[in-house]
Image (tube, rainbow, N blue to C red; front, side, top):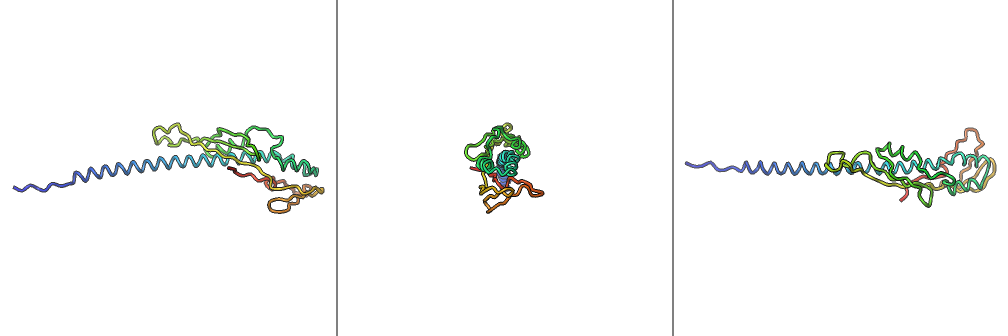
Length: 197
């Protein structure tokens, strides 16, 4: 009596199961790494937004002083404000930093004035965890990021001839007449706020 040839069907099923398990593991690993990258990028976005918002709030705090100096034609005050927008301002972290961090799913962990050009160095931590409870052991790990934003003048004062005040700015001459009807002071004409290394 002849015996039926032995099939390798059992071996193929075993290899298939091992291969599928490996593929599922790789897919899970890529998913976990991708989740962590998304949270980390979100934290960096929050840090950038918070630092820029803090610097803008600091710049905007001199609006009334700048307008008063324009109206009075006080060239010395205008030069002082252009040279150092931070002069006379408090050192507390501007409220806008926390607001913009929260809008980007993060919280402010550090917020300190920078030396050199006025500005703020802001650190944040993500509200969500790196593994978002998908990967065991990452439940308490939050992504962190830091950013620095500074305020620098765009203009220098040429001379003061009331009511027109002449500035030379990045884009050339800028004549301001604060007595003109409908005049609105836009401080972004005089200062740039940008991220700094």
